[in-house]
Length: 137
Image 1 (cartoon, one colour):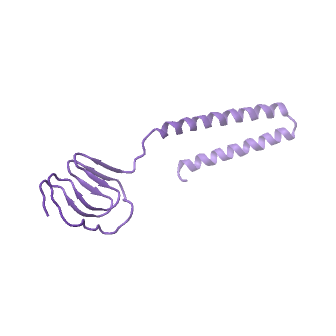
Image 2 (cartoon, one colour):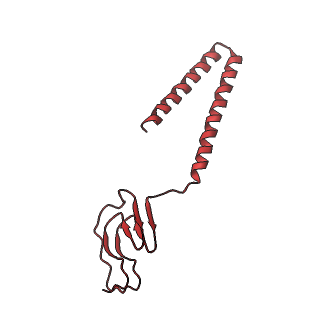
Image 3 (cartoon, one colour):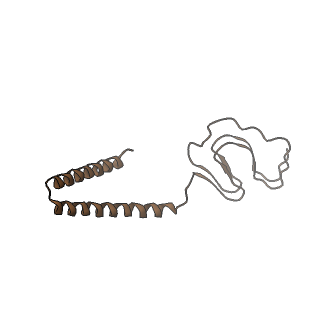
């Protein structure tokens, strides 16, 4: 954890610690009326903060998770890993096994996006991409 979140965590921890010490002193001094008021205020504040976090979590859980792999357009192909053979053209006649893609990292280093008609994109290597119409091999 870094940045402003770490600072917020420290502020909350110090405030909670001081509240506990203050309540212990009030109980030790036998001022039960004030101790009860302070404990009630602390509990109400904590309940309000937890309600805000719960509502925020519920609102964010409805959003779809994106993995950075998108393909848009007619015949577009996008893969997070390697592709042996991608054929996006019409009326293509290919024979033989698909070439083996080169080995590389298992996960893409960034977003993988193929946009446009018959486009091909991969997070790894592409052995063969046939994107035209009427190809034969």
